[in-house]
Length: 331
Image 1 (cartoon, helix red, strand yellow):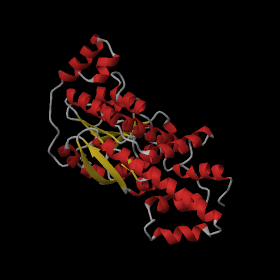
Image 2 (tube, helix red, strand yellow; image 1 turned 90 degrees about the vertical axis):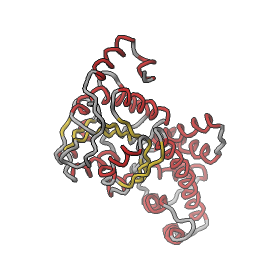
Image 3 (spheres, one colour; image 1 turned 90 degrees about the horizontal axis):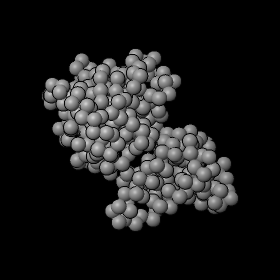
Image 4 (spheres, helix red, strand yellow; image 1 turned 180 degrees about the vertical axis):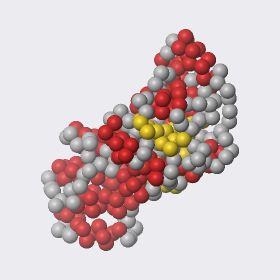
């Protein structure tokens, strides 16, 4: 029995849930190649990343049903032809593959596993859940177990690349779960970026967390370099152009260097969500007995942004924490 049911709900609710699910005719995932004529898409979460990612599927001709708690954030997709569902469950009942990209693990649990309104409660046997939220590996394993019990499939597939990667269809996608299912979903993944199979359920999340650890230290190095160059009297723009083609060049410079200099702190990825990600990383480090001081320092600096009411800014706002620490302002 899936852990989420065993922990939270009465035996009568569990029995009713599984009787309804298991009494439906079972079927395995079709071997026909996925295309707009045979695959209906459900999309949960239409924020900064999800809106662009889902848009690629609509433009490719797929029939898409969307759900978002704030309907106005889905309006762009509705204008493109998407249908609106009133719950994740009703969305899943109209879909063969359900994608989700929401804020926090608690949100993932609610939109996918709630026995009354969650997507799994409405998904037909053979359907696929694809969670693209950065979340806890243990939750990905739990979702996989629950999906398997309902004769469905589950893939954890968090992404990296920020808002520009989402807009341009150039995301790195870290997939965990059944490899054959991941390969079958490639026509959908390829519209959003490049999928990388990382292993069993939860391994996609582990890969994304390792990615976030790398980004945290890289971003810290970038803003420290900017602060140092500024204090040394260098033209910071020329400095960034000079190092971008050398060993210090990075995606962080490409994506965020110019934004930082323009004081453009609009979120490609929210500070609040990055704090959440780094918190999950630290929790996993404690469980694995790892000491990663760079990760811990970065998390503390990002927490300081949140404490200053800057949690809804983008991760490039880390420069603000270093400016305050050194009483300088990089103009």
